[in-house]
Length: 195
Ligand code: GTP
Ligand code: MG
Image (cartoon, rainbow, N blue to C red; front, side, top):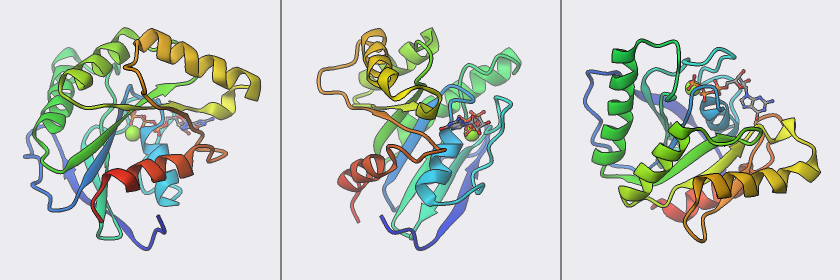
């Protein structure tokens, strides 16, 4: 995809309704700090349009980035942010599930997992829930620059094993630093959206 223009078109908080968009959407889910906003910036060739932070819990709304007036990249709040109070955590979970459940134009869901670590129970629950909802989540193994090349395949296999992914599930190593995986992700996005 050649990026001509991008803009943060809609921001949904806990009480806002999910927009009834006319363009296709792809969404990025994963625990806080896994690198969702950084991935979206890398896809858009922007440094900091999507706000990122080394502190977990940065994105607390559902953010719709309009790309080329052709589609949306959707940045979701992270789950499993330990410092949020229980009520807020539950609300974010509901927001994410409500979005995945009600969007009419959502064409693919990417689930981000930090390539260095075993997927958490929350990751496993989210993966299973997505499959149960009829999605075939594409896994992105983030921060691949943190591993040696030799370790990457091994960790990809570990993620597949722990999540017990459905046969044929794609796991893409990605780095917002080196941009490894960026083209492969765009290819998948372009194959699922109607342009
Ligand atoms: P929340 O909005 O809190 O849910 O987090 P997020 O998933 O959007 O993560 P974000 O993109 O804000 O990144 C979190 C931290 O990880 C930041 O300090 C980023 O710079 C860092 N980070 C993200 N992607 C990468 C990557 O590919 N490699 C490295 N080394 N660091 C990364
Ligand atoms: Mg974020």
